[in-house]
Length: 242
Image (cartoon, rainbow, N blue to C red):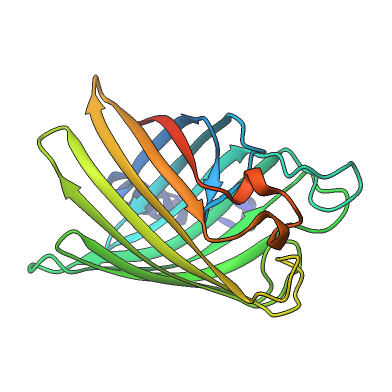
């Protein structure tokens, strides 16, 4: 950090002018949500219970962004055993653009932080990228050591959003989770699984109302006998962007 005593009046003026110009280009946005179950890649992160979520983003030209997002979590582990924190905080930075023909590109870095852990470290990092065209998004993510220190992980997914009018959309998602064989993410020697969702989102009174059917192709015995966390379920969410 620069020592302010070393700054001349001229240098300080230049810095202030540059900062003012940069701030004029920065856009700040936020979001809050309440969901009946926090599902991530098909698996409940809140013990099949309500979660409160929210985040902030800063975007600045040309196409760069940084942000943070958080959610309450409950991983069904005893204190001092496994990933037992009650909060997830994500930090990310990336770059996105869209061509005149409507093709979009998004690449970035994402860090998942679980500050309350007493046992295993749930924290992990990912790099991600996606391409979107028409109403379709194809994407992938990679982690060198996935959630709870379970080894290398690859994720591939496809999303499709179909507008059903001015205030209603049908949202489809399918993803494949490629986990390290024997890494411990699953309780069997299975090295991958599919997650999916089918949802309807209605936008009224400046709020998004979503009802989605979310699940995986995992059986409970493949996920430590925690059937409720991986079996398909209806999830209702209320969210607002600011």
